[in-house]
Image (tube, rainbow, N blue to C red; front, top):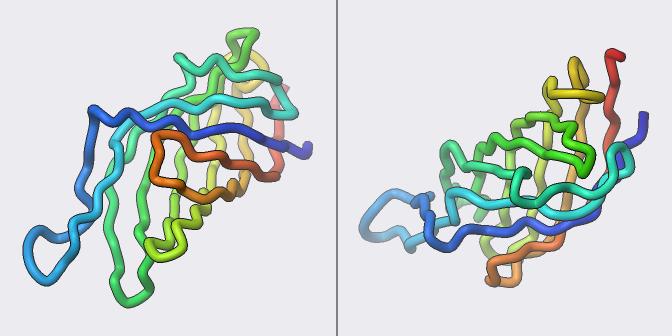
Length: 143
């Protein structure tokens, strides 16, 4: 079933993870380690932002390609309380600040029990604590 998402990544500026080797000649690159997701998705509606959390598990920057790669896990909780967990690979071009997230939906609760799927989200970081993202994918429901 098609899945569309329009929303915003909200970063927690109090949490930080370093994504580069420490010391010369590397510039210091870091991300907020945790945060929330707000927005709407076509299969489930509006997210409960406070219960739609994510965490960066690890990150690294390739200075040959100028791409920072972060591995993320999280949960999205819809307004009716149904939720699904996911993992994601986020690629950030550190020159253009364009972001692509490759999200893999895993099982959840309620309607999302046993659900699987993929969605690709795109956005551009502005250096603020919010990053607008949107994208399309598919989700398969076992129920």
